[in-house]
Amino acid sequence: MRVAILIPARHASTRYPGKPLVELRGPDGAKSLIRRAWEAARQAAARLPDDEVTVAVATDHDGIAEHARGFGAAVAMTSPDAANGTERCAEAAAAMDVDLVVNLQGDAPLTPPGFVTALVDAMRDGEADVATPVLRCDATTYRHFREDRAAGRVGGTTAVFGADYRALYFSKEVVPYLSDAAIAADGWRDVFHHVGLYAYTPAALAAYAALPPGALEAHEGLEQLRFLEHGRTIRCVEVDGAGRVFWELNNPADVARIEEVLNR
Image 1 (cartoon, helix red, strand yellow):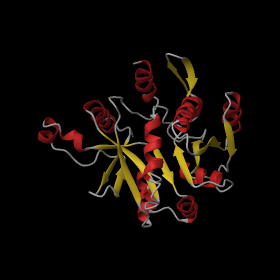
Image 2 (tube, one colour):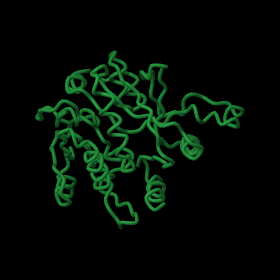
Image 3 (tube, helix red, strand yellow):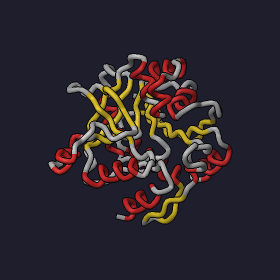
Image 4 (cartoon, one colour):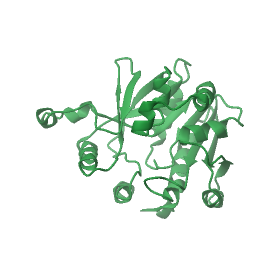
């Protein structure tokens, strides 16, 4: 297939302005968030040798574009009016002739390449409009979720889905609810962390840009809810973190968490 892996990046983040250019220190030195996300995308592209893969940063910010070109990334300039990463990807993809579009969020540098290939493989049968990975929580991630919510911070996103893996809902709250007894019995294993990564058919992506945001998307601030509110199918693809803690950079406090994983 012809696959475009797009990395949406905006400078004017509400929670963390300038986030794509924040430096993260690892064993290979200090690199910007957007560069680490681009490197993750390139590693994923290398796992798809039978497909024709394009990797590009999609942004409306000249500083991010200049920085990205400086480390060798292709850049697709988009409108500042894009409300979220999916709309930004839709705009960039409209000028491409591809069979599948992957949105690797610019704030998810810990995305393992296997997560991308799992989505691409899940979309090959053409039965879903969108596919997105879900990762069964470990005790550390679940504790981080609870700590963030208790402190009034928005941390990661959780997902619930049916027996057929068709998505039912996504939330910034920790769902499903677990009683203290359930937590003590390792009930956190039934909580799934939604990974900020999507694969779309070009038709679904084009339709998304034309659909109005709904109340759930507005309240949760989760772009994928627009698909669910308008009856589109999202397939959740369970992936194995292979013992790695997956975390996105949502707040300044996440910098230390991500650097800890990079250096582990």
